[in-house]
Amino acid sequence: MSLMTSPNQGTVILLFQPAEEKGNGAKQMIEDGALEGVEAIFGLHVSHQYPMGVIGSRSGAFLAGCGFFSAVISANHGSSDSHPNHVDTIVAASAVVISLQGIVSREANPLDSPVVSVTMVDGGNELGNVAESVVIGGTFRAFSDIYKLMHRIEQVIKEQAMVFRCTATVDFFEKELSIYPSMVNDEQMHKHVRKVAVDMLGPEKFKIVPPIMGAEDFSFYSKEVPAAFSLIGIRGEELGSVTGHSPHFTVDEDVLPIGAATHAAIAERYLIEHG
Image 1 (spheres, rainbow, N blue to C red):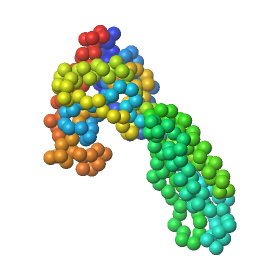
Image 2 (cartoon, rainbow, N blue to C red):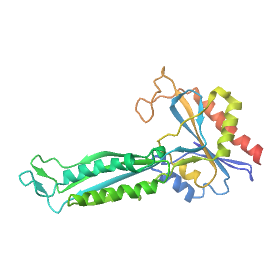
Image 3 (cartoon, helix red, strand yellow):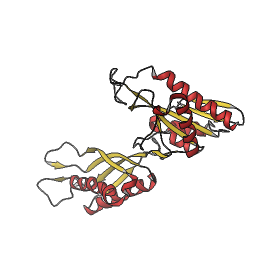
């Protein structure tokens, strides 16, 4: 859930993120005018990495930008194992997968921590023939220019396929899925959240946490207005709430009043101090 504050009107707007997993929810909300007149926005997300009730955040880049890709590597015709001199889409796809790893290990700034992962390969099911096309797909993440990484992925796939006399098409699903920008916390908004959390819960309940490779469509809001995105710990081994995005996920509901009170106080204090 996100809180948006508009000090000129003394108004707090509650925003429950729709379609967050695909990013299109935030973009649609912005297009529908959800940020009109809004001067600050605060987001809160549960995290199993930190003990129950601990608020964690940081100034600057906090969450990575993210996107997905699929590529079809094709030959004009299939080939048989009995004709090894023919075009081999499997070898071409294998070379593409290896070359994509070189973007991270040999091209990118290691301090940026980009990630390119091939998570799917479909090369057919024939044991004696090579498929006319091989499909690979995966995800990529970065804290800096996600579009620069996207361009390099497309370039590597197409040009590496050409080395093996194949062609390649690349789809980044931009019509179905959004390319998430990096989530960047405004320094002043972050300081505000930290001060409120410390005042309410005590200094031991607020932590400056490291950047996270996960992505959030809250990042679209942060590009429009000063923002601060925070985590609230829900880890509790007794209940088994030790992982997210899992059918085994369980939350200790004792954290709910802590999160609600802190989130409300962040908005109230902002209005008092800036209204």
